[in-house]
Image (cartoon, rainbow, N blue to C red; front, side, top):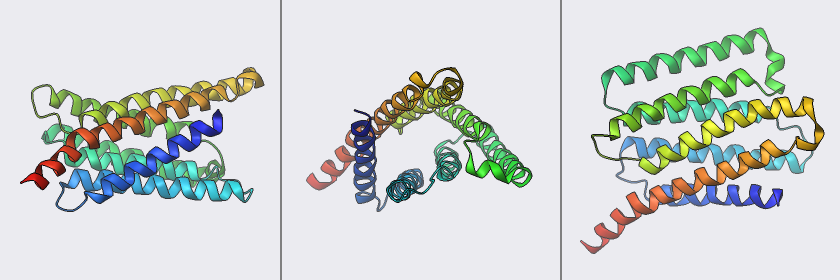
Length: 213
């Protein structure tokens, strides 16, 4: 069951990248950035699988995942949001968070080979704030990337809690060691399904309309 969840999540990710990449030409900058984000995650997951097959520790790739995700989705929201104050908040917090992580790793380089709970929390928490900005703006505006925004909030909020709880479950009982990671994969699948729904409702429909015209 666990391997099925992992493979299904990876398959959805690959499908999402392909369908978004196919319609990449003549799209808005936010669309291009989100497609680049999908490409980055695909590359990280492929390298992760290869290292796992070779029996090499791939934990260090989690830092590329969280920081890369934070940077790409931060730029995604920066380009998507029009409000000047919100854009300033995104720009300042994006820089400060990356700077704080750079300082942390310069002081404690050993963290590069461990799960960094601060990294997970700060990058996910700020992305949730950016996504909340976008939700607020959509209340009286056009619902652009609506389903993707829902998926990002659900996945990041749930996975952040699970990572923190998972860290405690290791100390409490080996019986529940894999439970948080399995729930996290379910959340990841839900996230990928929301991305696919966004493409189907917002971009595939437009592609069909353009073809008819």
